[in-house]
Image (cartoon, rainbow, N blue to C red):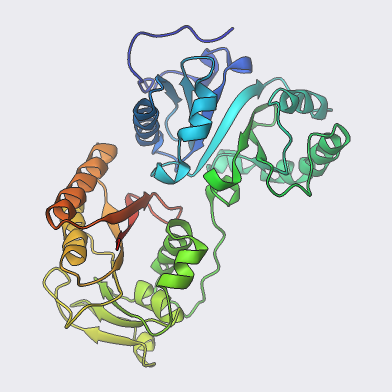
Length: 380
């Protein structure tokens, strides 16, 4: 039975709502993964994004679970969202899955038949299968079960001509286990989703890195730029500034890619970082330091008000001090989504005043905590 239509606009369910309170078995829905504790922010964002497309619905979120649902109104709504909703535009979502089947009471001795039947209701062949859980300590206990169970499900799907591993263009099948007896079944489009299971990149950072923040910039470069953009815009010999550099994790990351970096910070940077010729340390305030001439890149991990950082980055682009910039916005504990929208408006206003076309991408990275990471570049 489909959910009753509501006359109100999209909303986030109150914390006491539970996900099992609605008829889950046949409800088409968007399934989104996020960092635990950010369910409400993700729900607000996806509700607003769907409303912009003309689709209303309601979000179902339970605090600290690391996932949520958006249930759209209308029989054709999910197809519209699959065609028009862009994963890259969603900041707080780690993954975007288009679901229409939920299976519960899976028998412990034979889960395969029920899941195969659920997959068939999707009406699409798939090229590969990901068995996933939420990014919580409780859900991670299912990871061993998923690894053991996956080959059994894959074999059954191949026999039933649903899974075609050689079809590299077919959508991905996602089976998201709430526990070992309940799972959402849906599809992700390869060009409109995260390329990493659970939306989490598994990065290996050298022990030589001055700080763990090097992983954050590495993830930003992978997640916010395409491979073609990285090849064109991160060329050895380019020049960059790292504002608020100490102890030097971001400077190290850029230097590893062959960029020459000016590390700006009144604090100390790692002595190891300065042994080569790629990084120069300048003791100065990142808000007031200016380069001589134009640089290719500016990166910034200064802890300050997000609106101030947003204006700083926009000013660098507006004045031609750099062409590309990556920066962090430390969001407040409350009204994160509202503050994020405020920062977007600040950047847009500043660059419109300067009559500059730009690209802005923002993501709540796996290596982020209370901040989000933004990539801004000047076009033309």
